[in-house]
Image 1 (cartoon, rainbow, N blue to C red):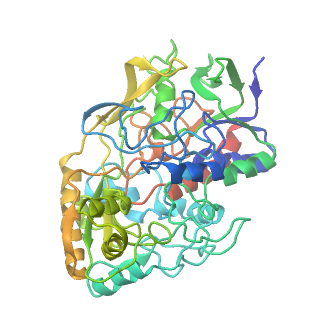
Image 2 (image 1 turned 180 degrees about the vertical axis):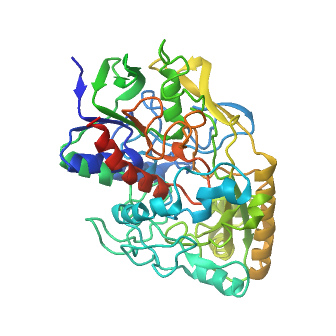
Length: 538
């Protein structure tokens, strides 16, 4: 007899799995959620962040042997990098997933993002159009609780208003807007998954300035909101339970998912419908590890596309000093951006990008203000002189980051390492990754844009990071499409190979576009709810 039985088995408790699990459970169906990580104590996580000497996104959520994950300051800790370029984006394994340390940006894709091949001869088209997803974008904004300016569509037409007004722009944002008035660079408030007013039993944002890696008060959405809703509707959460193998039956349907617990015990989860929502590295890792006589290339991999087309938003970081104070290091880490560069005929030649305006000063590229204090102290400054110099310098820090569109490339991929395994015997993820000339052209265009923006601001000491940073957006590896020969799931996120298997998350994106992916993940998951429920009958 199986240890876990439910109508729907969901692997992963991030925004994709938790949102779907909550909606399915609310309809009266029996749902089980399998999650490798543990529940997070918010107060303890916040304290770990404050105590950490190196403040990276994972410091409140350190990996454990039973739930290993990558870490930003050691990209060889979990990943086995096959190059030629280093893949720099990460995730965590905890209940609620990587929404614990996401920034909160909730941009929609623009309509052209779904037709990249047709319009510009690049990448592939999605099997759905913007209009197919638009109603679910509105639902996702309501489910997450997005604060935004409903009169500013940001290139994506809307049929419903945001549930909350926009988070106010900062003094720094307004300095950018004033300097760039009349230019091509339009500064707009960023829609965000954080409360601008008390809502859903969560407080409004009080500006703790630690959105990455932890919101101390849960003004910022994380997927435990939907995990809790799922549990209240009868779903059962199995944390510290790592899915290791997907079993198929003689009819080609998924029969069960095997999982292991830290004590080494193995359980089987049996259901009618199975949903894999384990992020775009762990999802292909699980599917590829599930090789059998019936599935020699792994589960859901008849197309040989599982693990392929790994993408991120390679990020150009630039920073400088303003002449007058703009007072960074306050409020959410970003409250405004430049979104009108996300589409145009130029995409035939180079990628689109969006420009994020940072409220976090030089924190991302240099570790400031802590590193600034150390640099000034090394010059011999002490006491009031050090304090005055630190105030003068840090009050003028500005930073922008352009998130560059990346095209799918089948050779950019997640495979299984041939020699190293985790404590459960599953091979570690091996990543092959490179930036092509298209991405490099986008990074160069972003540097030019940053130089022009900083010139308008009248800055000094402009610096551009030589190597692209990771955006934390792991995309591709199980893409959706109409043709079973070139894609993993269909337009409803159902596996082409196994009719009772669905795959959710940014793994299914055919192209990366430029928007931070969380809102689109949530919208696609909400759109898949009816297909999942319908699969129970057939």
